[in-house]
Length: 321
Image (tube, rainbow, N blue to C red; front, side, top):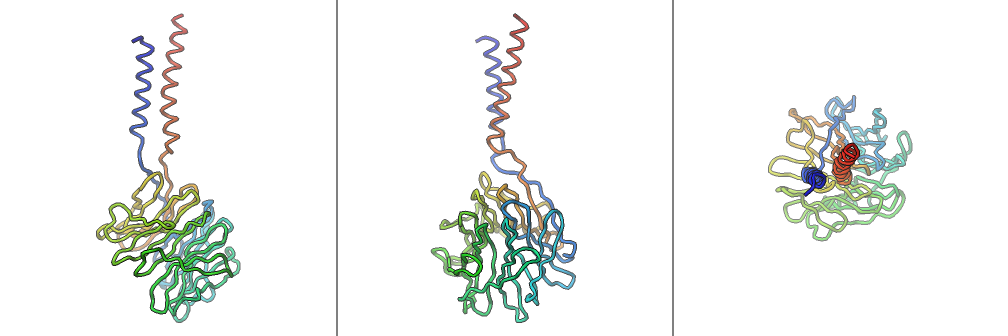
């Protein structure tokens, strides 16, 4: 074997090592999100597909819940005027349309749609809901809204609403025996959520059931983006872990989390938002960015190693000539 071929063989081997050592799962950098008014906790529930707007809720000094919108580092409080006992913002689309629920004077929940921050509220009540009410949890760019309502017997059911003023449809997954909740919907109309079958909750993505690896006490799928990546939480023993299905299954435990992490929403670029409990039992919101390069990028690094060694050998041959 010539020296040139030996060096090229070494370069190829190095490239294969780079590929072999490339992480198979994502890694995330966390940023804590605390609304300045949330002295008793903050929780991030949703993020727009374009990643420009985050919504959620905070708990004030009087232990009342208020919705918030976060854009460009600025928090704006969202209070439904009918929400005597609290307002929670759950989902947002690229147009800035926000959905969630409010709690009235009788402690009944009602879903709402808000055209944009500072805009017009519309109450959303599923016609099959009993006295415990309706919650709107997610919205896509087409205006399709998903959520849950409790029937007269207090059993929760998942619903899909074509748009504000449109038609409610119950969408409990097959095999549901104890209730279902729809949490999110993407541009393609794929709905995610959870349902009870026996004594344990299972996640669902469209018509498919999803149980997180390692889950012992249930799985919930909270969000889905346009590429079909999903996020949620599962319980293993006494601990609740977040997860993100990005290039495979990834456990997503927030920095500083003690006992619970909830991954609630995901943008089209893979930014995850949610909430975690600290050592004092106070919740904080978070955003998490995937910092591991995509497989294509890793391959390009490996390919560059081959080309780099090849270029060195070429220059040496030129000098020797």
